[in-house]
Image (cartoon, rainbow, N blue to C red; front, side, top):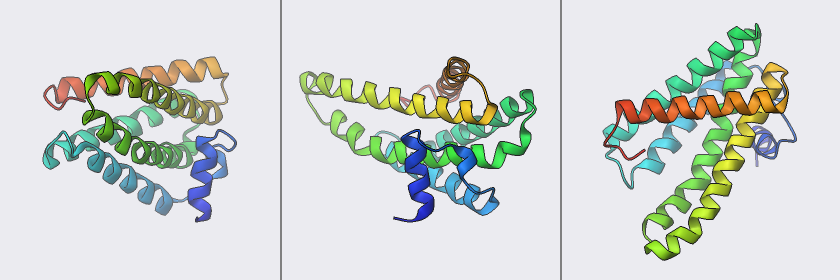
Length: 170
């Protein structure tokens, strides 16, 4: 496994932070592209390609804008490249892990799917905890503040998706 991929896994385990990633435009671009592709692929079971692509482009724009605005508010814009790289890199990992789980849940009877939903809830909680970890490390704030920022980001993302793509089922 490549060193960069290991770093993203360590961030998912909250043993490393975005500051442990190199400040690299190239790594940021690769991470953003991987996030976009993995998001589109994970949506193709339930969403047409063109709509999945639009949803993920908007998702990516919200992610980058939110990170930039928060870093601006905390006067830490120099951390944008590493923070955005970390968010996109771990987002890619979570999307790739969630993809088969969501596909499996979609194809199960309701009684089986409800049991699997507990796993999905755990998975979403882990994802939010990792994002809070990235926010905490990037802004040098307490974990409670980082969770508030994470939940704000999640609410904004879901709201924008529902506003712009009400039929996408996202």
